[in-house]
Amino acid sequence: MIASLSRMPRPTRPNPAPKSSGHLYLVQFDNGVLKAGCTADPAVRVEQHNRDAGRYGLTVVKTWMSDRVDDTRTQEARLLAVLERLGRRTHHGREYFTSVPFSIACYQAEHIDRVRRERCCCGKCVDPVCVIADATVVGLPVRTGTGPDGDFALMLGCGATVSASFSDPDLEAGGRYPLRVGDRLTVELETSGVGRWIAFPCGDPVSEPPLALGD
Image (cartoon, rainbow, N blue to C red; front, side, top):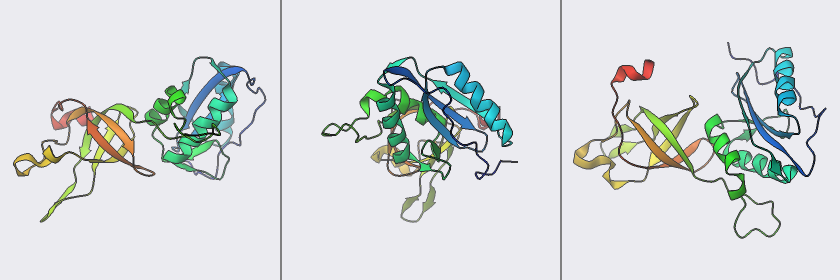
């Protein structure tokens, strides 16, 4: 049973990161909520989140920690701003988000130096970077009399599924989709709104037997 979003541990900072340097981190709970932040002591912070989550009947299922970075607070602010562009903040605090796949959040954090908007003067404006990710096709657009209706469903390496459209005229070559359920491919994902993506294939897909999805 998935825990309720109303039972989330409140953000605490018993060991705040210094302004000069520290680590960015991401934590995902078993109810799908993602938390981002910064810390001076990664091991202690992860243990705190595990302990706090248990008090609310939650479990930490995924964690990511950066190498030590300079100007941690600025980097954290950019990461939070990017995640807000990709997902939705919960009412539990500015660091908690839904609708952001963990692997996509990690990619943004790993490339945090690239998210600052090029023409920004204040240093606070950000744009999410395009994500390069391995994906498996798990759902196809519904076909209608006038062509495809809807998006592909792509499963990412973290297990999350995203809805993506392919802006490629060759996708219906011969009157059918070259992509099939079970195909694996590398894609470049560009955000087109919360939970929606435009996908650009990077190379040819590799077909797998249908049973591979359940293995």
